[in-house]
Image (cartoon, rainbow, N blue to C red):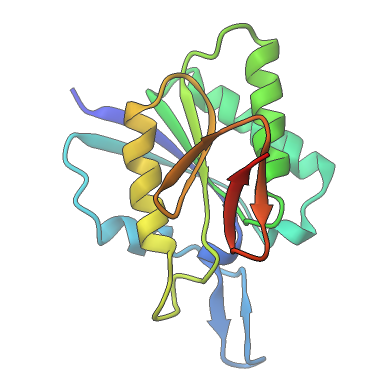
Amino acid sequence: MAFQVALISTGGTIEKTFDELHGVLQNRVSVLDAILASLTLEGMSIERVPLMNKDSLEMTEDDHELISRAALECAARADGVVVVHGTDRLAVTGERIHAQLSAAGAPRRAVVLTGAMRPYELRRTDAVQNMTEALCAVQLLAPGAYVAMHGRVLAFPGVRKDHGRMTFVKG
């Protein structure tokens, strides 16, 4: 039986595409299907859950609440949940998911957040690596909320973005 992953997409840098008319990177269309098509995902079934397509700097408290509720709902039916999120406010959503999992009693599934510092469309993107790590981590981790990026998995609470190093750290 395949491991079932609910993949919630919220936008962020990982999904930015180049708008030739305006000469800027924007969240317009999802590139996650292209990323997933490039991966070998044997023994895994992916349910895509397109929630929004926003830069996380534009997210509101209502957006963080919507994402965390969706993650908990998906965790009730899937073996694991991956949330693709913008990195600037990823920690806010991760903390919210952690709090809601804790309030609901013992977490039943792993919820792994990931994103990218450089868009998928750029040559030196970290998008594919981070997506691969998140999909692997969600199958192996104990129930709880995590971020998986740049060769590391960190458990919430207490995860933050280190803007100087362009990655996530604990504490």
